[in-house]
Amino acid sequence: MVIDDEDSSLMGYTVFSFYIKDDVMQRIIGTIYIICSLTFANILTASPRIINGSSATVTQYPWIAEIGGCGGSLIHSEWVLTAAHCFLNEAGNQVDTTQGAAKTVTLNSNALSPTDAGALSIPSSQVIVHPDYDPAGLNGNDNDIALLKLSKPVTSITPVHLIEGSTNDLPAGTVTTIMGWGATIIDSSGASAAPSNTLLKVEQKVVSHSDCENVYGSGITDNMLCAGGFDSNDTRDSCQGDSGGPLVLNNNGSYVQVGITSFGGVNANCGEVDVPGVYAKVARYKSFIQSHVSGATFVDPVIASSVSQKPTNTSEVITAPMEGDVNHTNYYLLQISSALSANASVFYETESGTATADVDFISTSGTATILAGQTFTTIPVVIIGDTVDEANETFKLRLTNPQGARFPSGVTSLTVSRVIIDDDGNGSSNTGSSATSDAAYHNTIRDALSNGSTITLQHPSTFADINYDFSLQQQPSTALTPLSDDADLVASSRKHAEKCVWQHSDNADRIVNGIQAGENLYAGVGTSSDVGDAVKSWAGEVVDYSYNTIGNGCAAGKVCGHYTQVIWADTSHVGCTIQSCSTLTDPDTGQDIFGSFSGDRTFIVCQYSPAGNFTGQHPYQ
Image (tube, rainbow, N blue to C red; front, side, top):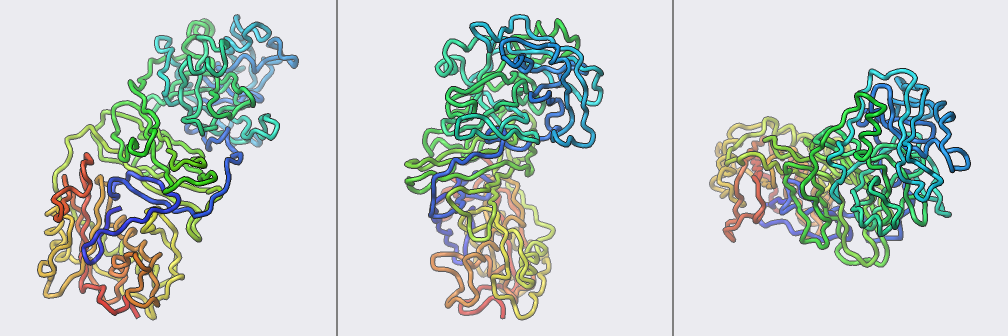
């Protein structure tokens, strides 16, 4: 965040023990610090997920099927695709098609017991296993594919598309998604346990054939596809109970099945670092599928021509990624100021903002861990590329469940926004636009103080959303008078904002209707910020403010002048301008305050009458 105090000096930055580097529009070159604590302990406890995955729904993946302890996918109104090993006899040495044909397929339900209202439970009538599948052979995992025919057709669900045979080799690093109801933890003996009652998912990256062979040896055939975690600390994986489920590729907003969950694990059943899961490669079995299923849809998906590599140092992190024309992974920096003697972690998950999950980015979640002796790790998010000219868009990253650490007092989660820069348009020029409810944004803060209520602000040091309880502050003896919108203040603020210079206007230029006005400034990258974002940021300074503190009420080394102007009792009117600038110049250096960042800058100027923040005065009585 970039904000300016009343003496026009840039606010100082403090490096905390645990912070995350953000790329959202209102930060200087995207720097954000999310404080956790100064105390860390060993972590990496088991997470109740697919193996460190996140919740999913049949709305997202309507074709996902459960088949009595295995997964599957609806590929035709009458056919489900799954793994052959789901139909093995008790000895595990041959397929029992008679028993397999007696299974029940569950569709359209997130939960298994009890199933959701509207769930479909359909008995199967036939199992067809690939003729070359031989569980007792030299390679009992090869050709692990089967077709399950339903006893009646399903007309209410659109089947998943299957990958075309011409693209059977996905580039290493291609991001895919798996889902299912399988085991969620690995117990102390290395065995999988605790199957999920609700649908879960996790993202995986395709691993090259040679790298997979290095793990499993010659047992990896051309009929297999390997996919695993995003880095050497990532234990996300499919597991027992997910067998037969689909591995899918997001193909510009729709899904294409590229694999069938088959096997995995070296020392444990699943969830091992640097040990990918192995999937039957759907593209290799087009002829087998079409010989039994007339009408399954095969497509040739758009696959990223290049795959982003995980940064090896902090300077390689892209703070504000371009959208691009194809899907790609961007890595967001999670960093500590100095190496620790023990691990620290936090659970993360993405949420839609102006950018929509699984349309503009692929929703994801997981545990981000900074290992002992290291100073950073990264959080991977897949950006969905397109060629549509649109505004820059933002999504949110929510952090919860810190292990061996804690968030600020009273805070249970931290949320930050992230910007995706559209690169399909021609850019924008300096055009001013005034907010229509400047006073309303400010009055939300004034009311919260008067009533001692809790509202969402932005922490001045962490730049994360926090729920702040204003009862912690001394309330005014009488409720603060609501501010009113003022067109003359809007005109005055626009006159200054249009200069696109990062400094306060001269006092002489800020006399409106014969009264000296005060001024708050806010700047950021992108064009999505509004006056509400600015006010939430300014008001966040309350965490460093105490009414009874001698002096200006602000903690040493902190800035509180923006907050006190917002709630200054004698101020009665406000007017703001949101200005889009191609550059935002620091008059002292002549340089853009955002450096070489490519994209528009947002400059927000709010002016207040009468001005507040007089030396030696409290903002209210």
